[in-house]
Structure formats: structure tokens, C-alpha cells
Length: 166
Image 1 (cartoon, rainbow, N blue to C red):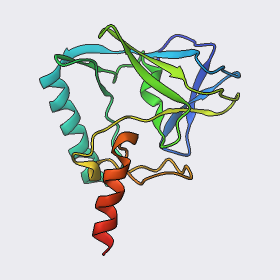
Image 2: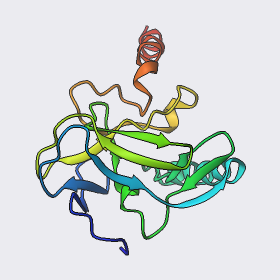
Image 3: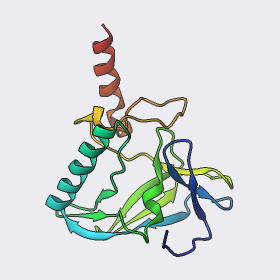
């Protein structure tokens, strides 16, 4: 891995998925933990790259590693670069951080609660309900809904899953 040292975090093996980002020290609520970095690419290229990764991971029956982050209506950030440790931040249904797009130019990861040294840094990826089955969740939190879906979509998701059990 080739990225700058960050006093807040380290990358290591995660119980959630493969690698994760962990706090090297206590981090206070409201702190900018890090920036999600990468190459700015067109929305069309970002969509293609994401779909290719999803198809590849389905063949392997493994959770995908889509590092494309939606920046705005025209552009995405391709975070699959060696200098972006934020690509290893895993999704959680009970996250300790959130992603914030600043001026449609950069994505920062901010602590939404106090984070203890050694705790894994997580945020809700905020995926829409469309194609939710392509994004199973393995976060293990008490309130996990089973899929990587934005919290605002949880009531609809729960209703869909409830109907399917009948």
C-alpha cells in the first residue's frame, strides 16, 4: 500500500470484510477522519466500472469491492488507487462516521460519534433500494438489515423482505 501516513487511522484485517480502517487513537465526534481520494471520472465510466466489479464478485460469490464514489451528477471518484486508504472503510448499519461531499469536489469522512482507539471506522454506503440483492451486508451490527442500503430505505426494504417470507 502506498499512501501517506495518517495520525488517525491504520489499515488492517477486518472482521466485516477483508481489510478495514481502524482508529489509531480516540477520535472525537465531528472530527474529519480522512478524505476519500481518487481519480475524477465521468459518471458513465464510473457506472461501467461499478457494474463490472459487481458481476465479477457475483461469479466469485464474494462481496464486491466497488471503489467508485458518486461525487455529483456528472462525475464520480474512482478510489481504486494505491494512495486511497479510505477505500478500505467498510459499510455498517450502525456506523461511526458519515461521508460528506464538499462543494461537489471532495469527499470527507467525518466522525458522527466518539470513536475509541482500535475501533473500525465505518459508514453507511447509502445505496438505493434498486438492486439491493447485489449488495449483501455482513456488518454484524445488532440492527443490520442484511443489505447495504441507505437507512432512509430500511422501512421499504423490511416490507419487501416481510412480503417475501409469506
